[in-house]
Length: 362
Image 1 (cartoon, rainbow, N blue to C red):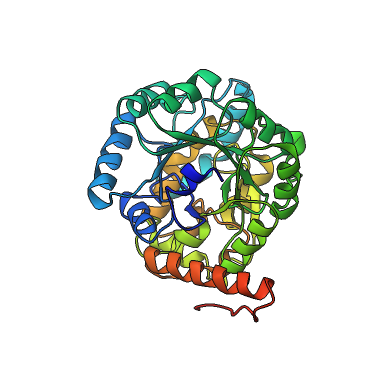
Image 2 (spheres, rainbow, N blue to C red; image 1 turned 45 degrees about the horizontal axis):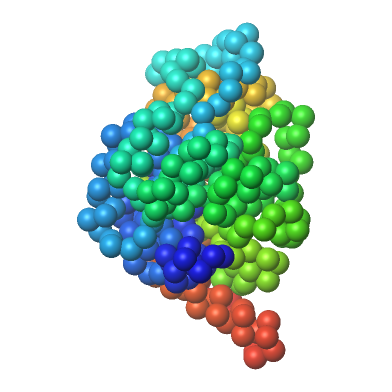
């Protein structure tokens, strides 16, 4: 990675921005203080809500951090399909004594207003999900000293990130928890995503900008593997979801290692866009019928998810998690960052012929 960007965070460890209240300021601050790059998730927040979290994070750490934005989505959802799905969810609304949300609650997630805040109050790093910002947006952020990253799930998407002038690309493998950052939502390609190591290798040959590898990474040895494959840093989400500082619901944290939830699956059930979560009742019953309609389905199911959480029912919640979720460790975020760094160092020593890498803290 460019030396200037590398200087922002000593360890090649990035805490993924997890929207929905998980990536809170105290989590990002703990990772930053331990030498990684902490991230705030601006998705599903108002511009003022994002600004207040930035202020809070700055009061907790003087180290560089990042903010993640969702790209506005094009209008290609079929209203009739959304109506049919809403009808299917009527039983859920009755069960949880909740009203379905308004699917027309907004498509752009306050994108332009958030960009204005970030231009007026620059942060060290901004990343983008669900697409690539226009070159003018990237240039404007560069002018105020912000480094720009964007997610890609294919080599072609990585080329688009490079063409936009971004400083680095986040290569997201299909193993990743939460929403796949595909630039276009094409139902025909559901489930066809590349595994992380293959993706990193292909992106390495496709672009000349640095790569941040994301998807299913839970141990320092895996970080060493993606670095050996050509990445410059690793981004971890599920690994930090279980930490003490994470804002995830207690039931969500517990579910990561609960034997009741044995696997993950990509689903449109909760948001209308492919996202990887623990397989629970809601996902099993509604996933096969959910249309490609984001953010309409996200808005539609939001009250149901909140009601399920309030009722203590993990079977109705969106339990986003990567494929490595069973390896989650309930540690303070700073300590987890240090453990990952130690595991990475041990793995590098082993790879260089200096010994056998240990399994790390359990």
